[in-house]
Length: 195
Image (tube, rainbow, N blue to C red; front, side, top):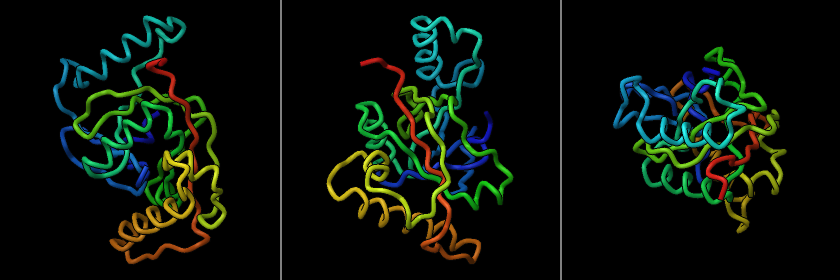
């Protein structure tokens, strides 16, 4: 699925680019290429996918998934990659209106993604297990905990972080966030490494 290449998945506390051109659309993922292989894929990404395939040969005919990091800065991207690796972060949130604006496909159940740190080094492989569209003001504490990777005031932290992120992003187009704005709420599971 190439939907990630069009936008940036927003997981603020808790984007896809090639050749260092940022394509920011109001989600929490952003990608940056570093040590590339001959196919233009970062070496650690292709190595991680090869290890996964070796242990899971039923996926040998699948193409290598998109590789992305969460957030839009190094500190948060690296922190969120670690939370994903440890299994504490199990969700991501995007702004539905931006999928529409950029005519991007919504994430789908079963789609895999290689989560990287800010520098593009592979950390984990995840697979989407559910995709819902939920108004901002209807996000649950349970979901916020999965997205933020913490059980300490997760809903309050989720609302503050995501409101600020969406507000800054929407400001560029003269729009403002609302309590009723639709959020694409993606729950995922870490499938590699197994531990």
